[in-house]
Image 1: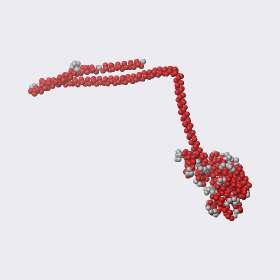
Image 2 (image 1 turned 90 degrees about the horizontal axis):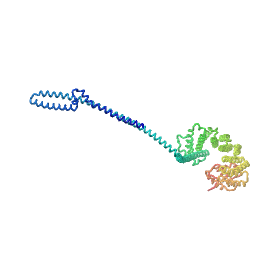
Image 3 (image 1 turned 90 degrees about the vertical axis):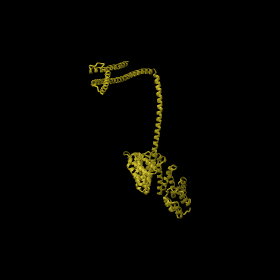
Image 4 (image 1 turned 135 degrees about the vertical axis):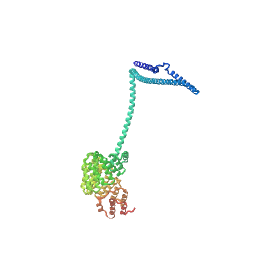
Length: 578
């Protein structure tokens, strides 16, 4: 309430101010009287009033006008006008004095009016200021009252709220708990849905990543094994490379691009990507598996392009950089590179270089527990034996095969077992060349016992070849009846058209069929099939036991297999018409 009292007092004070100002302002109304008193002391208050002075002025002007008119008339009549002129002059003087007084009176009144206007302006300004102050003060007072009222209302509301909460606390808490639990359940559903979505997305991404990695790995394995790349693996890998920035790719990305080009048989483009990949290697990647893969892939591309020099150079670089690496995956590439070096040297006729390369591989990796490396060791031992045979060293050849068989005869690895089967077959052939039929027959029997019925194309070929070989070799040591039994066994086991033709030829030697039967069997051999049979072991037998036309027919058949002549040449040599 004290705020309201202050406001009322302030309002009363302000309302009193105009009375004081108006009383002060009335003094100017008496100013003209005071001023007139000081101007002419002989004139009373009535005579100095402005209205009376103006009446006197108008009367003098009228008298002067009548006097002028009389003066003109008298002058026109020729009368004496002197008295009139004197009177006229007196009136003019009085008129001039009166005008002077009026002007002085007007100046005084003007000054008084100006002063009054100034006081009115001051009063107006003062009133404006007080009303502004009053407005501010009222606003301030209103704000203070508002704040106080708001606080008092807040206090009252707070007390009422406390009372309400105290009386309804259990219900409020129960409702809040229920509402909160409902919201938590809703949020849990949302979170669970989001988690499920993220989990599924992660699984999809992870599966896709694994699919791409598996495809890339399969492509590399196919390249290493010199096999055709699976179209599905190639498609997956190609799709993964579509977003690669080919100007700023990583070494691994360039490798993927190279593998795609390799799979499409675009080997020149593959080499371009491989060179870019090697150039993109960081310092810490030079001794990694990635670099080994790049060098190996380059060698494979050069091999496909039949650039043997560049191929061998790639092997040299890989071996030199990683020969001492302890990384097992890298060692596999090193072993493969050494083996391919030996194989390429052997194909080029560099038998001694090939032997040295195979010896290096066997020495470095003979004790390796890695199956892939052991496969290369076993294959190197087979090729080492063949190389010794080409150099005319049958004992060294047989020794290579014996070491291989002894070391790997119990291996369950299929690739290694293929090498063992080849070693056994080659052993029997060497014994046959040495005319050691007993040793050849023992090796032949061991091969059949170990591998007959095994479902592997290469092992089956070894089994069939040893049966054919023993059927041929039996011409030297067994009776014709025994040889025919071996021939029948071969014919029942093998579906190879070349093998069947050889068996028909041996039957012809034994007189069991005609040369027409031999020609028919030879004609059934597909033109694209490579002829591998040589008849080296029975050449002396053929020369010593046949003469005349049959000898000519025998030589024509042998020449066909050894020189790979076409069937028409053989037909003409045999003198058989269509």
